[in-house]
Length: 185
Image (tube, rainbow, N blue to C red; front, top):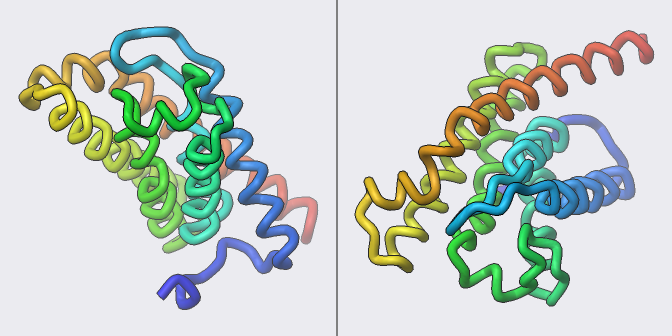
């Protein structure tokens, strides 16, 4: 199925692999830019995830985030609290696992019409929704919280900044594509 999805650009396999690695590293770096909060810290990871999908497309964006999760599972302390594999069972695990399908959804929507800013923005908002579905569901199941308590613990304080991250991602993607097109025409 993934082979039938269009790529964002006609990149060589080496360029595609490099893009996946770069966005996995960008996600790791954005995890370290955080404001400690309990049980979920504020990070810039959603911005990295949205950009991965918008720039790399559905397949490669998803692969970049899967690589990020595998880096954590492999023992690298690249999560926001430098916990390594323990992060994949802690309170933020749902958000981390949600990065993978979020990048895919963002990439899939963004690939429909790459030049439309509103579509990029819609893709970003959809990605935020996917991250929240996974993150809040995890909080509800592992902490025995109802939706309202999970929302207060891991959503309410983050929703406006995360929606702003969607605007930033759409703007950066649109501006980057315009610059690219000007230089290569």
